[in-house]
Figure 1: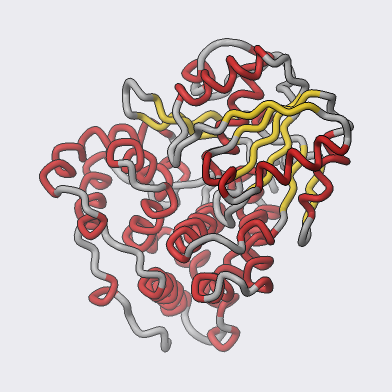
Figure 2 (figure 1 turned 45 degrees about the vertical axis):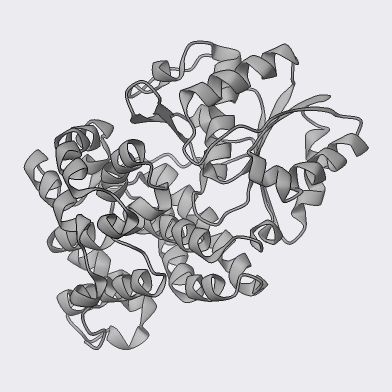
Length: 400
């Protein structure tokens, strides 16, 4: 008998080209004083100005915090929170990549509930007050933060990525405008696209997956495998950009309800200690982790393979699972995903950090959702394998 599962997502999702133009209309319902959480890149691209124009048309005053980095920290959150309170804002707008949106989520919750970011990390936390309303506007196709109940913030003192998970972190409104991704450079397109692929695959093979998340995850995987290369090679191809935005949205909703697994559990410590962008660290880990997981996820990996190639229905599950892994490795190779050594990490420093990273990975709880749950020593060995991983040496033929 199917266990009872809960499925959550934002109250409203606005999608389509130039949907940013609906920001003023949506904001008017939430109050008169808006607080934008963003970064300097969004300002340089003119996206913050576009938001302000939409808000001003509706008579809404705007305050802005623009200091979020690629890896948002508790310092960013506290600085933004202080300014938001000082301006007595009614609602928050997070525009940018997942970093900006995660920081905005944290500000929204802390504004009405108090405390520090660290207070919200424990499992099964109770959040008493509704957060400040949040409108999330992603400008990348990958993190899915605009639709998830998760926010990841780095603790500057401990260099640990703190994962907060609660329905209160789900934005009230998500505005998905693929036009905002047209200026993304190839490297960021690749990193965020593989991040979305990780979300979808991990949600699909997760121990706590459910029928609703399976449909979304599988659809996202199909779209990403079809369109990510195109978006990477031609950022102005709006068909590919739109498909990637939908896939990121689907994958975000899927993993928010089914959880991520070992890739993300191992990825967060790499990002925290070596400042590797989240999407890149996920991409580096994905092939190795899937090889480790394969024996316990044969049927699921085979279903993915058959969704990618309809001619494989007569092949064995093991053959098709190998095909799936081969296609993922080819994608990473085509997107020029580096290994950790090629990224510039010192091997001795990395080796010295492996014990801490393995402990932090297990502490996050994500590896426990993996079909094959690794031991502490197995995680350490997986980190070592990823350091010098060579796609050319490991790509197998896709012909079953």
